[in-house]
Length: 115
Length: 113
Image (cartoon, rainbow over the protein chains, first blue to last red):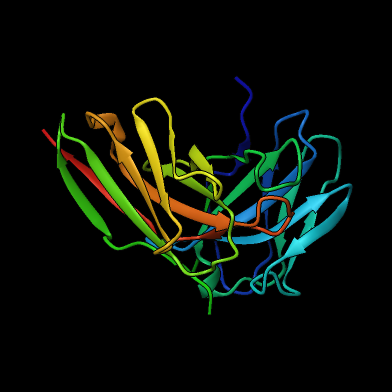
């Protein structure tokens, strides 16, 4: 069964450093998403991406964040200058269509620890 | 503001019993609701959804009930198994839109042997 994959599974970085989190969505999906989950808290939407453009972003997704689809398979989330409060699980998801009634498939997540 | 929330952060259930996980929502315009299951160390997984023109929807061992009058959503799991141990999230949204779902805080389901 096709699945979303994410690398690395755990990333430790120092405050102020740049990190890039990588995702490989399901191959025939066109819509891609990043979510964040601070430990023990709810899942928070960050950004959606379609046709090489951001479709929607939340208030969390400020100028420190950017997304890119550098090739036909990868979808990345970059945090330019990490803060302690960026420590969280980051989930990538993809779906075949953009309406919320179409199931989003989530990856296993990347745990980001900022020290 | 509008929000989605859960009544109980943790629910302990005996193996074999039925589980009921509750969720309150406050946006009366929401017409689409999803339950997700998140097992330890994994991403959320879709369980079941329901549209506002329905009161009840059944899946395999799971039933979602929607009470629009009191803006309440519940997930019933029949004959709970150890594999049901997870955090369960409800989420609400507008079905015919690209606007993202609003997620609730999550309820941790613990299965007692």
